[in-house]
Image 1 (cartoon, one colour):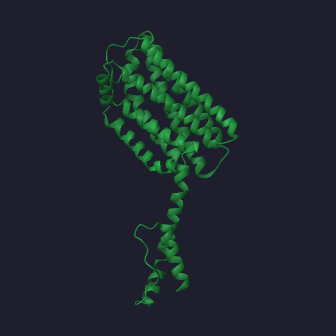
Image 2 (tube, rainbow, N blue to C red; image 1 turned 180 degrees about the vertical axis):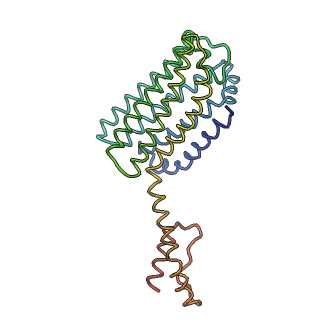
Image 3 (tube, rainbow, N blue to C red; image 1 turned 30 degrees about the vertical axis):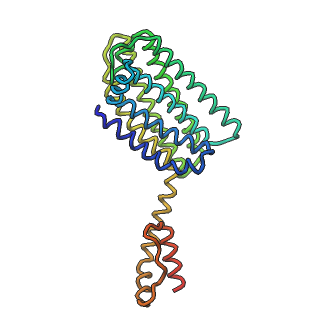
Length: 295
């Protein structure tokens, strides 16, 4: 797969992060805002570091073959933990209970990352593999265990997040429910990604070559999963705003004929004071409604 398959989602996610930075500056104490930003940042980092050109650059710069793979595994594990913690804070509940659950997931995945590093140090992966390390080293001592640990950690996060979102979705309505169902779909796709990878690894254990599952099908699924999940996270926030914007535009247009008629009745005097060109549609609608009522 081409580098653009990895870099385009990364740039799209980081562009979304840039749009959230003002919220982070204003509400940096809000754990929900912080974890949203962490999820977006780590999601983009996972794509960027998994791109073959980045893999080659990291390995070349460090002088350690396949160090990039360890970096990707650590970033994806941190992303998995961040998604779980975000869902916990988003769902809410007693503050102490939420903090305890979130801390457990954070500690659990911190241990996973530490074990990934330990297994990489203990193992031997001398030949650089930019796209098929999972299957190439599936039977190698310690490196094979590192790969399985990474995949199991990813699958655990996918299952847990899917269950959390599913249970929550059947209790709520509106935009929040739609966003949660998209998150369910996105994390089921993530689960399919790690399942395909693990299946290809297990095939290598049995002496078979099913690498296409890991090198072709799985990367395509994870890109789709990231897109669906990102929409799911943002839909409850931006959905109501888009509806309000649409209603304001429609109402503004409906008042157009009356506005023009009233404005034409007194050509020497403007119907209302001018407003900046960058004014929101809500301001434009309020100006048109107020002027129409007082004319």
